[in-house]
Structures are given as structure tokens and as C-alpha cells.
Length: 461
Image (cartoon, rainbow, N blue to C red; front, side, top):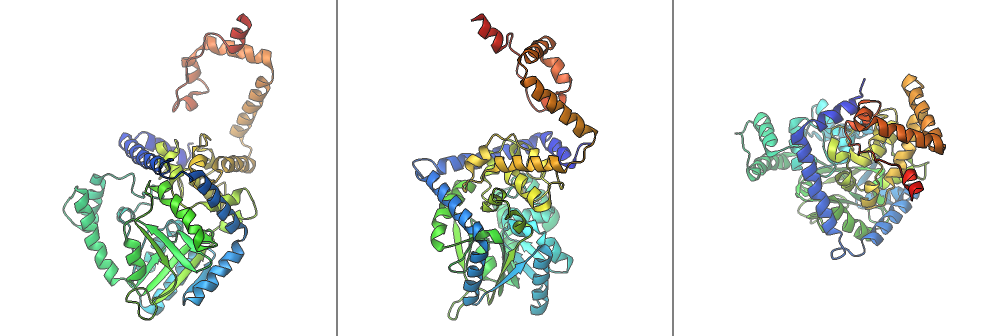
């Protein structure tokens, strides 16, 4: 029986319109990235990657020190830091605060961390209205879908899909002009901003030496989310901390270029506490919820802990030949693509979706484009080994193990190897495709077999 992962992958592969949408959108982002990091634009790109990797390595190796430093500096500026083990503790804190302050409406900026813990659903289950304010996230919230891509959450939807969602959920005429769709969303969201009691954001970086939360965005909705309501709550993974404000220069040069091909995102906000006396805007209360949710489980393994270096740029998704074919909703959790293939098993356990570490060609493209030099292919290989160790030894696994043993024996015995090659050439490609390799060749082209092997040609010469 095919797994749910395989079923979703085949459904995506069979959808020609979806294939076109994914390939076009990721290709556009991929090409823009290449232009933005070219020698004429960023000649020290590789040096910046090395610096970013070193900063992240140092930060994670000294995570306890920098989290405590960050906490002290937030408190010194009138803010509050709360450590949360999981999504339940995050939602419990927000619900208690909302009840105490009499809050009913929450506006929320784009945040993969809050998607990770299903925060909207948790809050709405207890009677709070939580509204996404990023346009893509807002569309998906109306459509009851999760993000398709880390940076472009509604990448898979056409303007006609958006028009149908707006008509059904907002009771507006069917509008397919993109600019008018944006205006419709803005008119609804502006009223939400003005009426909201609490604003919730994520964080791209947490600066330890100043206690600042750094948010990078293009639409400006995060600035309204964090300044208009009286209470601002930032929900951030503990791995987002970096030592100094000076380190941001390295990451900001890499993040936008890797994500969207921009030299710099439109808005970069530094938030470090509630509104001060004399300031005309900003929240009266400022909270930072530092989320673990499985992150500390990665720390003991020095190789796998580099998964926590990720800055959520999405570059690995745009270059991955697997993601570009099977899309984001095939993956079982909010993180998709190569980074999802290593984060999901580590956060949720390798048995949650054992096929996930194998959803890779190991071409290495993801590691080459990663701005913080995460060795994704190496981690995938380690996770594959863990999956195999954890699997029960059923008949299928015994046959697979026997097949690999036979292959290993054949590759180390020249004469039988040569005879096997002759037999395959006699059988022909069509017979091979219809035989045991049928599943493998269903999505791949098997090249024509040569008339003579290399060994035979070598002997003739």
C-alpha cells in the first residue's frame, strides 16, 4: 500500500497545471537569486557564506549564554521573555494574557514558527479571532491550507484560484485582476489592524547584545502588526539568536538575495521593547516567547545540529529537482523541500514519515545554494541510516537487503559482472522497464544500452 507521501507526490505529478505553476515560480526565484549573487553584485558571496556559517556555529554552540544575554537585554528595555517547551505552552500563555487584558482580535504577521505549532487553530478553538496579514498567508487562511513554500506560501495558486477563495469567503464579486485582489485584501486587513488588541509576529533574528527582535519583510504588514496593537508578542525559535548587531550585516546581505533575489528586503525592523515615553506609536507591552518544540533534541549531535543554522530563505526549495516536481503539500509538515526533509524527521521522529529522507536525488544542489552552508545531503544520509535501523524487518525489507547484497557481490566480481551486462543488452530496455525496475523507470528515462561494454571496447583497442 503506497504511503500518503507517495500518494500526494503522484497526485501532484499528474496535475499538469500545478506542475507548471511550481516550476515557473521556483524557476523565477532561482534565476533572480543567481543574478543577485553574481560577481558584479556580490563578489564576496562565498566569504559571506563562510562567515554566516561560523556565526551560526558559534551561536548554537553557546546557545545558553546568548539566550540568557538576550533575555537580560529585553528585560532592561521593559520587555518580557518567556521560555516555551512546545506549542501548547505558547498558546496557553497567549490565551491567558488575552483573557486578562480582555482581548478578542489578534493580527499576525508571516511566521513559519507559528505555523509549526498551529497557533491560529489553537487560538480560534478558544474563541479568539486570529488573522494573517501577509497576503499569501491570508489567502491560505481563507482557503484553509498550509503554506506551500517557506517564502512564497501561496506559490501554487493562480489568480483564478484566489478569486474563487475571495468570492466564497469574503462575499465579493469574482475578481481576477491581481491589483484589485490586493486592494480587496487590504481593505479588509486595514480594519483588522485598527481594531486588533494583540499583534503576533515571528522573528528572523534575535540579537543577544541588544535584546532586539529583527523582522525582515516586503509588504509592511509586520510593521503594522507590531506597532498598531497595544500588545506585541514575538514567537521565535531559540535558534534564531545571534551574538551581535554587527553580525546582521552578514545575514542581511545573504537572506533577501537567497530568498527572492532582492539586494535587500523592503522593510527591516528592529524591535526592542514597548513604546517609550514620548514615542507616538508602538505597543504598551512587549513579549518574546522563545520556543523549543524539539530543537534542543538536535544539540547533542554536532553534525545534525547544523540544521538549526537555517534562516528560512527557501533557496534549497527553489533549486531542488524533487521539490520542483512534487511541491510543498506533499511533505507531511509545514517545512517542505530539502530543509523539511531534514527538519521534520529530527523534530518529529524518523518514523513519522520514513520516506522523507529518501525524497532526494542527493544531487547536492541544496547544499550548494544554502547561504549558511548546511550540509543537507550529509544529514539526509544519516537520517536514511536511522530509518533503516528503526524499521521492522518485514518481508519487503528482507528482499531489499538481499537485493543490495547481490548487487554488492556482483560489483566486486568482474566476470559475473561482465556476463550480467551481456545478458541485459540481450534483454533490451523495454523488457527491463517492464520488469523489476518498472517502478523506478516510471518517473525516469532509462538510456539505451550500448552495443559493447567499456571492457569489450578496451580489449579490442
